[in-house]
Image 1 (cartoon, helix red, strand yellow):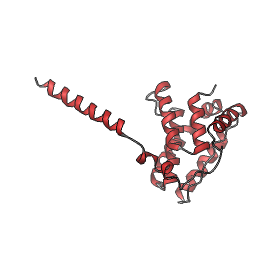
Image 2: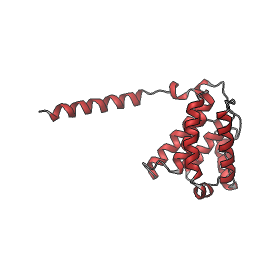
Image 3: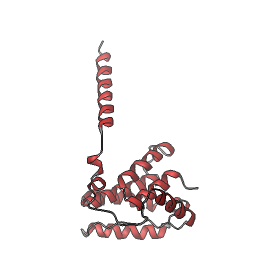
Image 4: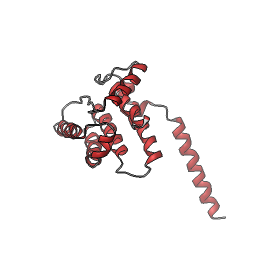
Length: 178
């Protein structure tokens, strides 16, 4: 059975090409089911989304670095890929092609993951239809809210959490000397 988080990942990866959301959805799932395991298949797919995000933005060094991390992990996850409904051998071919495009500085092109489980594909298509998304449509590289999502999102909650943590550390340090 394929986790809902992976279905959401696939819908974002193929439906709206929101690679930032792919990362968010799968990272949360990974932290719940396999925390700390940097060789987890979930990390491999997270890195693939991050690589796609960087590639689309024109950050080729960042895209290549995260692509290589993804490929290293996914290469060692044949049975897990198969269990998730992904055609492992076709995925390996796509990863080699993507690396070649990155190394030769070719422009970004959307990638479709090779899903070979018809039931999974039908689930993904159903979710896409509910969200008025078109499965497999090329990424809209003119949509700055999508392309630069990491820098345009509201981060006030993250900043507040960091400030609170800093104050807590400072208070703890101060109490260590009393």
